[in-house]
Image (cartoon, rainbow, N blue to C red):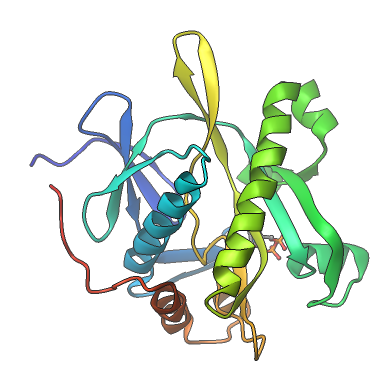
Length: 247
Ligand code: UDP
């Protein structure tokens, strides 16, 4: 098969033109970055694990009626997804305080939040992904009021579902970041879940020991990054030896 045309290279993924119109290929790299690109490393095997975890979770999420861009996994590092117009808003849902919310409001990490909280960040590396409000999103036209309401509701549904799913395998879903895109059907746009869902963009703590099983192992130099990701996959029942290619 001829090599596909590269459309974009991000920090953890490369996007290639898909084999059919309206599709793209997400290639999961082993590269890890943190602190707005200031910290970089390669974590051997991370891309393969994240490709499988994201496939698994996107399939689960679509079963509860949330539309996602995921079509199918192509091989160990690539998946075919629907091409969407990405909304430049990172949606963060939090159940337990950690990371930036702990710093911003001086809340000890691990403190249960009074309720699940949703935050929005403007997706712009040059600006360092600033925290924004709905007012900015609608005012600057990044999404309209109906779209943001759907994004909010869908994010909370995903959170409720995944919190339980992870709890079932002994993991606490502390927080996560997701992205949405528009899929145009004629002149109507549908909001669908895009990007990925993996330990690169969520926090997962072991239910009993509170051990971190996510990208904080890399951010905070805790070591054993790949083996923690592997453990998440194992607990979800994902067979990491799956190398079947549909190509
Ligand atoms: N997150 C992400 N990409 C970003 C920023 C955050 O995937 O550019 C995820 C992060 O992994 C965590 C959640 O969003 O699960 C909340 O991150 P936070 O705001 O606490 O920022 P951090 O402390 O990670 O810088």
